[in-house]
Length: 144
Image 1 (cartoon, helix red, strand yellow):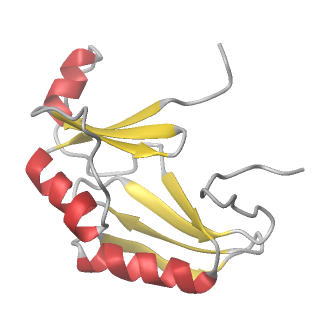
Image 2 (cartoon, rainbow, N blue to C red; image 1 turned 135 degrees about the vertical axis):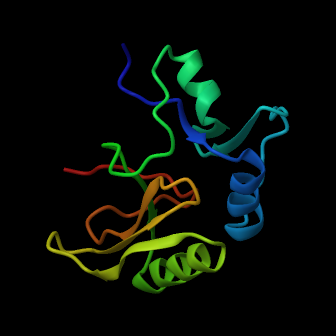
């Protein structure tokens, strides 16, 4: 198996609500290949999909236990070029209906980050990492 991720799918309770959050709130543009039951967003070399939570559980042959009430063991991260950009995105997410989990602040590893949850509770880290510059196209490259 090649060392890469192609698509991240988030199970959502209300696809229309989630689309409003990502598109109207965060300013994302859906891919033209999106369909009624699933919405795709191109994120550089990776894509994000929003798919009904129950349908996703059924497709993966997993038991659906209702909306997430705790930590599901995964976070998504969005890295930026400055602390000011982190603050702006955190404010944008909150205005769009996201819930701030951890306000942006200087962190132990030398960067600056905060966390918000989208309307379905998926946690996003918004970070500036002085040790990992982003490419002009926003690509993230681990250096070492």
